[in-house]
Length: 550
Image 1 (tube, helix red, strand yellow):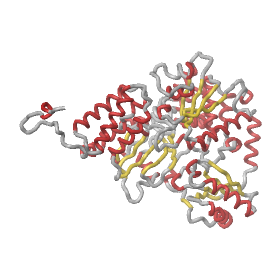
Image 2 (tube, helix red, strand yellow):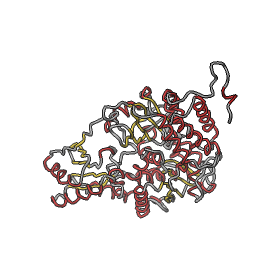
Image 3 (cartoon, one colour):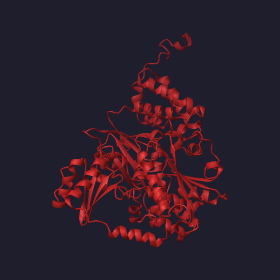
């Protein structure tokens, strides 16, 4: 493909666009509520009403307000978009009636609420708008223009420099500088290099990467291609968990379409650049989100981590330099290339640039997908955008970062959401899960739940994680059941520090975070469950433990 052919596809899409577009969410959440039935009913209703020349029924990706699905948006020239919620197949004729009369359904939702108005869509700019199963729809949204610009107007070094200046940090959890990682791989003299997209999203309650892959797969492919050009790679892999069948299907279709149009493969955009992408499906092991374990799995080995250094950027897949970023990181590459590093760096805070996508879930009114500028406070996200706790409840804490993160109490809701501020509270940004808890939540049980998750997901390679998570879970379980003493609590804290400081990989190193953060902010809940210590000194000063018979 050449630029003129890309222009032709874009112009045709603009010229053939119909006056009214009914966008029906066909992401996994709405599909689980019979979104497919709604989509088919809308198609039938348009045909039966004779509006086929005026109305397009378009299946789109995530429209963000997941708690109100299935969702249907009416996009009509000169009229403000109207969002209909909890749409059933039998509502199709009512929506046609709305188009003709302008009389809204009772289940109309006000898009002027803070949940929508406070968002800043960068990564999600196409989600809920384009058809993820048609490459023409992506091109109509100026897709693949950034790749052409990079290949024909920039050197690989200039692309790397742009990423450094943008200040983009990896959105997978650790927050390492994306540009510096790219620069390390680019400077390697090796003639064989790889690019990997980490789509192994395993945090409970997290669905950001899944939604992007289901809604805008070509954005990720284009971002990976630009990265491959910048670092000198010719082969890429997307590592995605098998629990994401819809994301996998749409990725496979997107790769096929891109190859057919010459946007993947040899001589892309009539240049010397060649790049191919393959999908690798993981079995759902949480530890494979760790980059060295992920690479072992791609190689066909058991997914266990290895010590670092060497880092993947120096010696990764099959011993060759490998660039690994997650879905959201690659999805940021295209808008940075299109709008410039300075534009991206102007968003967010001094050390945390750009926006961040979160999956807002738990005890909150508005659950779904949000994208906000770095530095927005937790209070603005939870109370303004999320609408606070339902049924008149009160928020108690917010958990960020999944099993590797921490629980932040309501007293700290004015904390800005950025890498450094969350770290100071004993939590992390993580991939973007944000779970809200109300006053009915038992924080000790929350700590036990996440420890059980880490215990089950530990690969068992290193003793601190393999044995330490089991022991910590047993102590937490004993505390929850009211069978622990102050001595057990002290032992739990000691174990947390030991596992945190001696584990091989990030799973073990961060497994104690939910426990440590709840101990820090909700210690009284732990202490209220403790029994009197039977081995404490009696009033006479005799240490009973010294006379105990085992």
